[in-house]
Length: 620
Image (tube, rainbow, N blue to C red):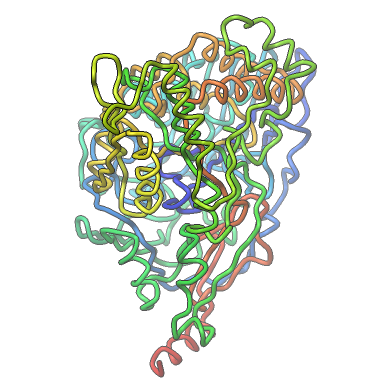
């Protein structure tokens, strides 16, 4: 899970922000009661793959050459370098300037390794975690990074950051700096097994820089960081350039060796994805992830690609794909009836879209935890049935008797059966067709707006609008720029929009922000649909407190099944591959990690290829 999962829309995401909520908190060994554990890494399942004396990630080239500049795409605009708050639109790359206590190995689903921290310590009762910072860790201004910085970061983000932080860290009762390099968190419970690791992922902020500044105000003042890159220059709404920090304190750590190889990363801003694609084809952009199936199938036949100067690749991954969907806003009375919501699902003809729009590239998403063991399947049985049985009468009865299934069509575009089922459900809910308009008993028409960010999804939303019109429903599409979209989403000012709920290898604390009543009422939360159901709240807490993997699977499947049977969303589709395109100037790692691409961190500019490409471009 990333900080803003709405950025993970499958047609507009960058692979660099794929969900990383493979959140774990069991250390290597030390699971016996009464044993204090000091370790270099933590893993939920088994042991971390790498020993304490590992020298680099196994999938990187530790001797990768440094140098060169790459140019990447950003869409929309920016007015801030603070990505942690609700206000403003943060520049792409703003988080690259910060270090965190731990760093994830992209080759393992559930392990994190000491980075800014030197040692991780878990007490005997597992109701806390301590981190000892590395000597020599320092900010870009040369001042040391201290435990007080960690305390300041946590308290500032929880008090003034996006609502996500308050739900994610809800079980932390206290954080204290015990000395200059040791920080300790104390927990409300020892059942939140992932909490130590998600605290380790927190970006550490410089207390001496932010004290006296208004953290809640968007600002284009270049902030102080400690990471491998710092913001060198920018032009508002047009470009941001990050330069590798030559005196980076962590450049020889095993978590960074062979990483951060390019000297500079430039993000060029474009108003829409079409123009950005043309910039890539013209050689102005070095790398892109392709999320539009039509473009992947037909858009890469341009002169440089035919000559092998630009390459496209499809790389399978093992990452859970979560849920992308049209989400209705349950805060609107129009969508309160589950029969109405199911009718909206019946009208959606995915098979037609996959044939005619997507070139058969996608699989239908039928779970909030798709492409993982946590997805509900068949009818509930065993431990999952035991969990659900305590909620009989409080969840839809079909949870126990019917496997949740989405409607299927022949793809011809003639979805008569779906329309019939939808109309029957709408009539049951009090809606009838009069003069070719769907109205309720008071004569109010069934109408709503679909809010989109950018034009990419218009080709999906507009056919859906036409199908809805056959039932007498008046739906209209409104496309706004990313900044306006974010403001409206944060204020829950929409009828329907596209939501993307990123899931990882270990569902946990982030589920509070996705589904619970408290977050349905809190502006800026990630509960886009406005879901509020006491049973779901209880199931979320059960998931967070799961004591082992078997129990986590059963509890998460129970949550998934209840969410599905409420028909909160019109599920879309997912891909199990990265589709990437790049100009032939890069050196690539010896192999791709299992759960990511390692771009741009582990890639580099190959001097020979770069020179050959420059010569070939001159001859185009």
